[in-house]
Amino acid sequence: MLLHPAQCRAARGLLCWTQDQLASASGVSRSTIKDFESHRHQLHRSSEALLIAAFEQGGVELLFDDKRTHGIGVCLRTRSLDS
Image (cartoon, rainbow, N blue to C red; front, side):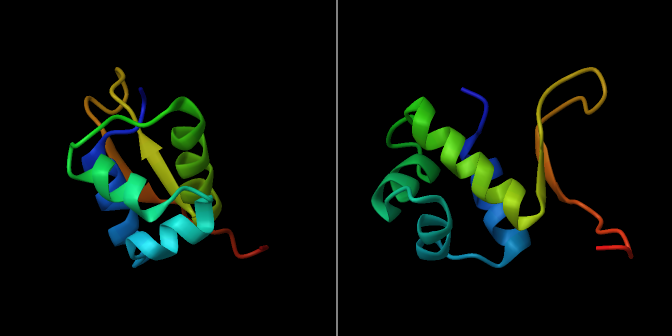
């Protein structure tokens, strides 16, 4: 499991997305998102992949615990002036 519930909530916050908007963007049901974010259950790998792809498409970079970041988090990718 890569995605943490707090990352999911934070990424939605950066994008100003509701759970319904994330559900629409990812194809994952709102109830699954709600249950995951409130620690009721883990995600299936396929649902996790869909959420991560939706966040990346929206411009969010998910940060995972590694030597570079020293923890988990989210940030907005900067867009180049060429795009």
